Image 1: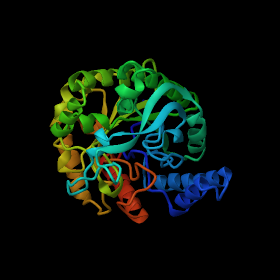
Image 2: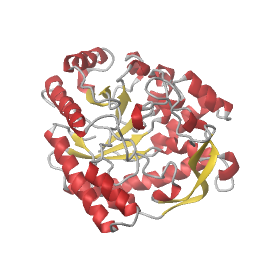
Image 3: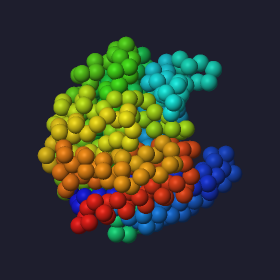
Image 4: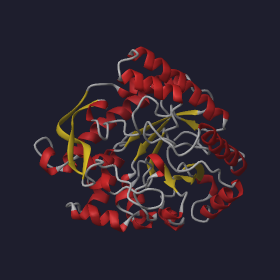
Length: 387
């Protein structure tokens, strides 16, 4: 493990208007791929400079070369990812129909004309690699990072469980586990390439644990679709853990959250206590947990008692769901509260999620994002003056 990033980030940042315009124009054929990449390069340089100026210790490229944090596939447009084997199908909405607006009303990612259906990327054939995403993304980030740690984010194998469908996927992969093991093997290759390229901090995004397992209503919905949630929790943890088998000397992190979609939408309510005792001890190959704690929906800190004794916990106490700046004294008080369960030397601070889990986000302005990042950096310096 490298030095602890006391002021951390989750990954995605708001895309500047010029980048959104360039990517839109590229999709419409109005500018070349090279021109779009130049806009991405400019935005990434600006993003790294911003994070470092705010005192962030582990910086990302904002995920600016992606459509969303799901780097492997487009949620609705399978062909946008670096892998083959997926197809965009209009099918039962399932998890995409469970999303909520900030006030708790329906906010599903479904078809406008039919809340029971959605366009989803489903695996229909053996997966294959059509693009080297590490080569596309990491070297540029590393080359443009100064004193901070260049951090790489990637979706964990377990998140992809919702891309396996018994009707459409079983010819390629007889079971969901067969598919997740194939995704694990691909992601292990990604990790190995990152290590070879000098990456010191690799972060797996696994929102599924806090979305599907902590909320009783969400869990019941998955069970109604044929999922054995108790078994899947253990199976998924073991598969995600095996990504880092034999890989040491770097920061190996996993992020759990309850959903972060445009307009501040979310998926689940429920604290980590429903999974912590069984789940955390299985993460023997992870030394860092990034956990969402920005709202009452996330529960209290008591579940941190089950975190492994060699694990750093990054407290996601700063919300990305609206632009109002938190009271620094309140954030510091909550860090001290958490230290009753995990000692201060194993704690760190971050926003609760990315600022733009997808390409488009509308929860705050660029200035409000900067203020939140700067506050994270300032609080970290006060709480951990020795780093």
